[in-house]
Length: 72
Image 1 (cartoon, rainbow, N blue to C red):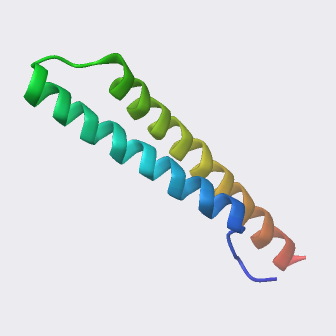
Image 2 (image 1 turned 90 degrees about the vertical axis):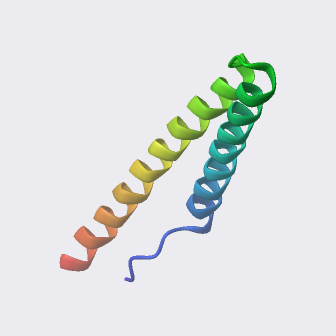
């Protein structure tokens, strides 16, 4: 069995990166325009980081499971 990442996990990783970049962009915009940080950009940033970390953990778990099955 090959160590392939399922398409669903690839999609989750892409969406989390998009949310993370959107949060960073909004934070930069809010600080330059208004001079203060808003709650929504901060929430998007935290959500993106958390989602990416969870997806990364799921991908590693999937890869280890496939690696273990290959040895058997």
